[in-house]
Length: 90
Image 1 (cartoon, rainbow, N blue to C red):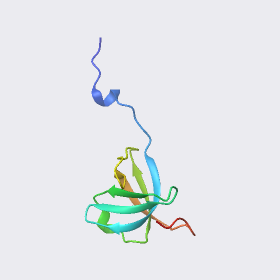
Image 2: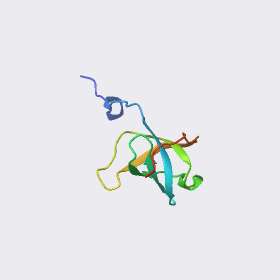
Image 3: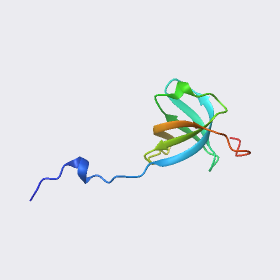
């Protein structure tokens, strides 16, 4: 029987995408309002200082979210996007 490396055995998942409005900026995280569910989420990201409150972002992450209040995710990628008209207000 051939050995199987752990990396190959793991399922490859498609990233989950969240569109959100930035509420607060800290050095290593963003507090955002998910535009779809109107829920506050803490996003851990190394480039948090590139964003400002009021901006809209697209966050890619692996789908894992803590059950804390607010929920927390670790972003693989955060990009600035145009804000949609309307949307929720957290």
